[in-house]
Amino acid sequence: MILKLRCQLRGLDQDSEMFMQSGHRVRKFIVRMTYHEVPIIEQLMGAFQIIRHQIRQDFEFMATVLSDKNGNIGEVRGHTRQFQKYEGKKLPSISEFRKELLVDTLGTATTWMLDEAFPKEV
Image 1 (cartoon, rainbow, N blue to C red):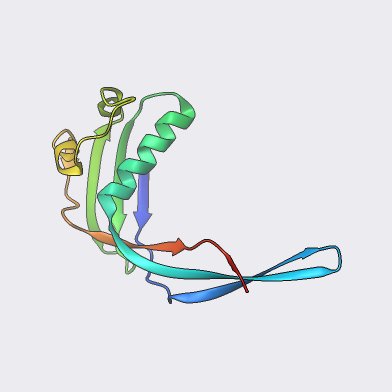
Image 2 (image 1 turned 180 degrees about the vertical axis):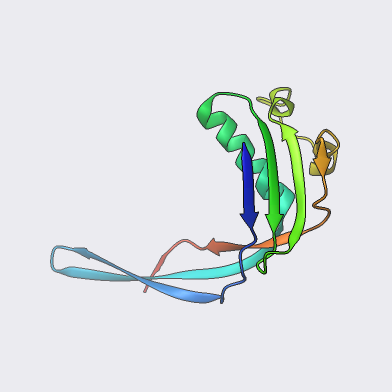
């Protein structure tokens, strides 16, 4: 699997409104939306683990990560076989896990991730 990914821009922290209708009654909810930085490597490894589980097959992967301005941030290459020995167990720290990658030039690069809180009725 070959991926070329671009980092997400930081959005504005804000509240979003959501309306739900049931019969004649309309309920209003507020959803708090905030952005926070997360390590890119953790997002990638999590995504590959989910894909491996969904397709029930191991595969070789290569991911090139670009900045929001198309500059190259780094690359990772590996094989999902490295997840096999941890099935049903807690994964090791990401630094230990990274040692098994064939290529890892992402360093401490981060990206922005949107976090949506649970809706609160107002």
